[in-house]
Image (cartoon, rainbow, N blue to C red; front, top):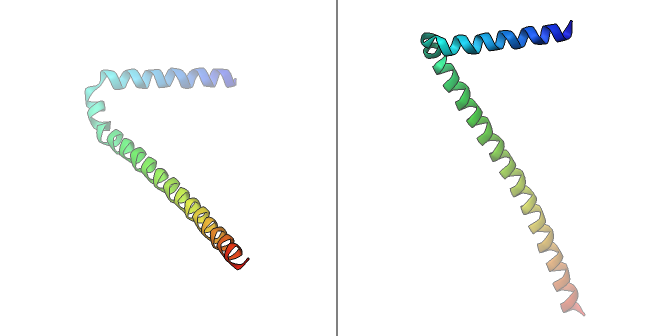
Length: 81
């Protein structure tokens, strides 16, 4: 039963794809929606990349601060003794 439903879904998807290719009016009708979907994908990708950059920047800042504190401690120890 599940396999039959999957085959029916695939058949319908093929028919829809064929209808889209055959009907230029349908293609023109859905062109703006397709463009909007592609634009949203690019926007999401840029947003994700920006978030990754932020996280990476926070990690680098954290490690730099730890390094500075360690250098200060080492400097104090060296000059005290």
